[in-house]
Image (tube, rainbow, N blue to C red):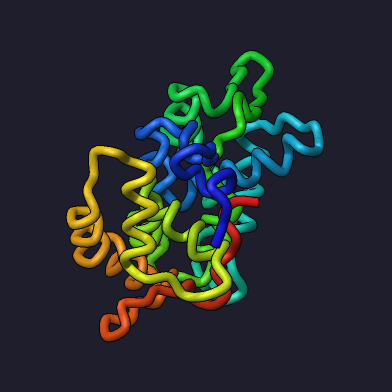
Length: 215
C-alpha cells in the first residue's frame, strides 16, 4: 500500500490537498480537460499558443478515424475556437489556471493544476459518454481512492479504504465512511469503468488499463 507521503494521509501531503473545490467542477468537461492537456504540453515546450492554434490542436484530438461529420473542417475549427473564447478560456482564467493575454493573442498555464488533466483525458479516450465518466470520477474523494488502489499491489477492502478516508477527514467516522463508499463512491467509480467492487468479498481493485493519476 502507498505511503502517507504519497497519499496525503494523516501526516503526509497529497497533490489534491492544493485543489480548490471549484476546480473539480471545471474539469468535469471533456474539452476543458483536453485544453489543459494541450496547454501543459505547449508550456513544457515554452510555447504560448493562440486560441486559434488551440482550436486546431483540440480538433485533431477530438476527431477520430470513424468521424463521418459532413461539417467542413474550417467551420468545426471556427466553432471550437468560439467555444474556447467565450466559455472555456474565460472560466479557466477567472480561476487563475490559465493566463490569457488578449493583446498578444496568447494563452499559457498561469499555474499548473494538481488535477491530472492528461490522465483524465486518457481515461475518457475510449468512453462512450466522456462527460458522464468525468462527472463520476472528478471528485476529491474518488480521485484519492483511485490513487490508493493504483498504489496497492493487491485489492483493498472497504474497511481499508474507509480508514484512509477517516485519516484524511477527522470529521468522518468509520461507519459513515463505509456507507459513503458502499452506496456512493465505489458504485460510481465501477460504473465509470475505473474499478471492480466485489460485493461478496468486500474487496476493491483497480480496473485494467486505468492510467496512473499521480506520479
